[in-house]
Image 1: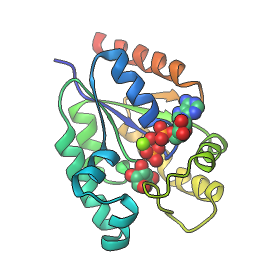
Image 2: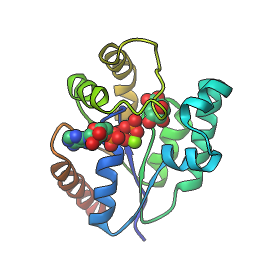
Image 3: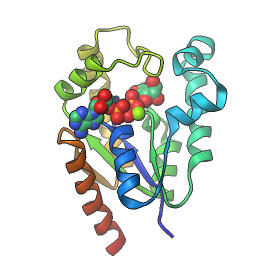
Amino acid sequence: MTLPIFLVGARGCGKTTVGLALALAQGCEFIDTDHWLQEEVKQSIATIVDNEGWDGFRAKETAALEAVTAPARVIATGGGIVLSEYNRRFMREKGVVIYLCAPVSVLADRLEAFPEEGQRPTLTGKPISEEVSEVLALRDALYREAAHYVVDAALPPEQVVTDIEAALQLARAS
Ligand SMILES: Nc1ncnc2c1ncn2[C@@H]1O[C@H](COP(=O)(O)OP(=O)(O)OP(=O)(O)O)[C@@H](O)[C@H]1O
Ligand SMILES: O=C(O)C1=C[C@@H](O)[C@@H](O)[C@H](O)C1
Ligand SMILES: [Mg+2]
């Protein structure tokens, strides 16, 4: 049975974009925790945060992670999923975790082009580039702690998929 594959990384690193392509290539099901949760509660993340604060959203996000975890699935996670030690350990123990790593400039350019504010309400109230830099500095170590493999997510999506597939071959051979 194929272990679930968890994609982690900052907002805009491509978890959703690459995850869909990877699932197609692997013949797996694709699930995105942000999309799954918004569909489940019929509210945007911005609305959940307005009503319940970030702590309320984080509790729902952990429940979503547990609910969607199953074999033969590629699971794109939210950018802040690694903030919880429980989530980090859960993903490492249940599946293969891949960190899609990209520099601040790449992330900020993508987020400025496609802000998707309903799904990505501001975390700091600061301009995008400043926020990305500040948040990545705090989280990079957590992504690395959670991940079994790190890939360069600044490359084109097809190349990122190929690199993840190479990592998965290593994981399956070990
Ligand atoms: N490897 C890539 N090369 C170029 N553009 C990309 C790449 N990956 C994603 N993008 C673009 O960047 C934007 C953000 O990507 P995506 O929504 O997949 O990120 P995400 O990691 O899922 O973000 P979030 O954590 O907010 O869910 C999209 O518009 C997407 O088309
Ligand atoms: O980086 C974050 O903390 C977040 C990223 C998004 O994927 C969403 O999960 C939400 O907007 C929080
Ligand atoms: Mg996403």
